[in-house]
Image (cartoon, rainbow, N blue to C red; front, side):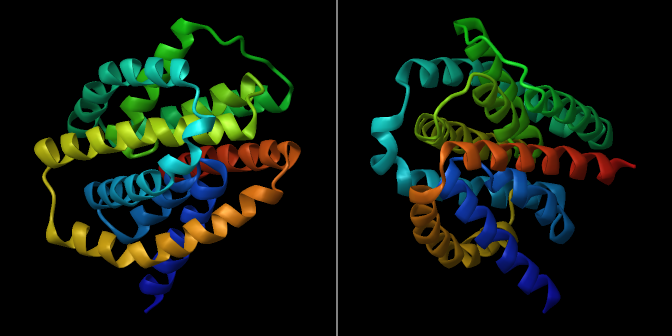
Length: 238
């Protein structure tokens, strides 16, 4: 019963965040889903439900998508995706998560201290590649893009639109790669199906929240989620 309540809470909160901000599902859901499922199951449930959210919102947010950046993210991810699945299959996940957590925390602190990033085409490709690698390895594509957009002072509309459009591609390809190379199970798909009604509720509530989240609150929420993901991954490995 406790596990069911936790599952409902995780999916609902993560869905609301993903819908209202364009990020947050994987950052919030993946660490807690690992408390309830095996790594492969947690990653694939995250990918399936995140893909549903992106599909549901893509027509509504398409006008906010920066197509130039989106294309460079996608091309970059084509390099990162196979690297990520190799890490997932071969590398010690403890070391991988430890390294990622330290990197996220260091970069987030720089952002809080008003460190700014100059956006370039090469950096767009690099961020897409890093995000792709994290998607197939630990199911968390959000931190690299979130750090990058926050450092370049991107508006909340452009951030949400571009990240959700990118997720539509990267989650689908990552799920296919995961299923082919890591396998899947009935429990993964049944758990994802059980989470769909919660995702629908999250879509409705998240859309309402987006209307009253201003740019300052949006940035604050970004820092909180980044710090949370970094600290949680770090504490998991200690």
